[in-house]
Image (tube, rainbow, N blue to C red; front, side, top):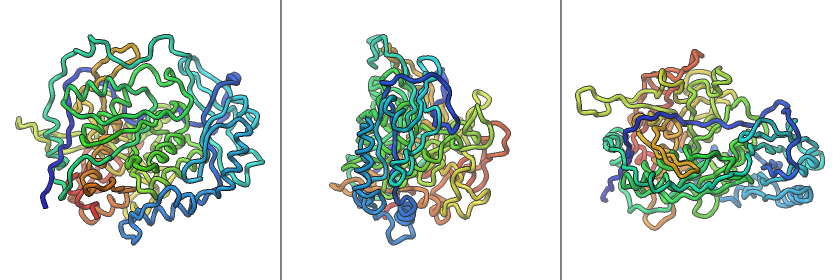
Length: 559
């Protein structure tokens, strides 16, 4: 059989402005009481209801399906199978929905019958949940949230486990045109010169030597979580400058937020699309799950999984957005984990940035050792940051890879540390250190100076070239690589395969085929002298298992 060469493309240009975006943190739900003035009665806010469901049973099943040593390995389940085996009964789900609708709720039961997600007006939510929703802060960053942690109403306690939401950032209506189209002047700015990073990345990550393949063009897609605007103009400009066919982007707004709630520019979303599209030039589509910047991450996770469960839905879910793990409520974590478990059992691969605050994920407000979620979930592959070491002989060849750490330019580095919320998963059982889930799992190129300029457009129509990077480029870049492998391993005329959770496979390969990994043994992500974490031989919480040789990885995961 013939083999097909693949091209890992990093089109990079030289720039002068440096910004680091990786692993943006949400203003997440808080356990503490909130103070402020009563919010407007007509304001519409997102809310999620966790139905009584068999979450522990689903966890056992997802573990079995993702274990390469199991006879059920990759025997993925459909949405209806998940609902019937582990979700609430149809009668209970419909009964709860009717009660909510009578109270003013609009929304629906999710495909797995584990959650009911929708929205309510402030006045209706105050009455039904016996709370007072308050607002604080000045525009454009006014925040609304319940004055006390939400509780399940007594009438629903027999059928409902958790309630999450009724938090959001609200902004005044825009006074100017918010169209994201560059002016003709900006559109004609000459493209900066390219560098050799494309060639070097292909060499270093061994992206040209995948196993025997079929033709390209499968409908492989990625769902991405986003909290800012989207700019097709910026995406098109990058593709035009570098001769790339960019993935088709569809934005799915999942709450009642307005354009102004997402700021005036498109940075993170543009960066993510460019990173994934340039690594996976055959990528068919990207679905942007756009959600309120102060809402719970439980909402976009549920929406992304629902999209993935639909016919021809995305096979990969990626997020550069995270939340300080220690600030999450138990209810928020439980609902989020249900979504990630259903993703795992249905064969979706979930990838998350480990963050850019090093081993202190909650910095700068809290600098103690910490990680961010969902990277810390056992059902997610957490991606840390790396940077190249080049030859000093004049060839410019990549000779090594070290932990990405931007100090002293800025206090940022790839995330990594032990989790405080999750126990050590079975596939990390042979690692040293505390018996907790350890982050990250792998590393990927994150240095902004390597990637070069990214176009950032704003609501005035102006576009600026900025150097962006961090794990916000590492995570979608790695997601693009996995999408590329899925495309490569899918038989002609067949729907894309699903690889499911990567971690059980990756840690097994680290023990049996360590040559698949570039072991990163130099560098640290300790930014606040907390004593964690420094790269070493083998797994470490600064770089995970290291970076991957993509061709050998594809051969190893193919079954």
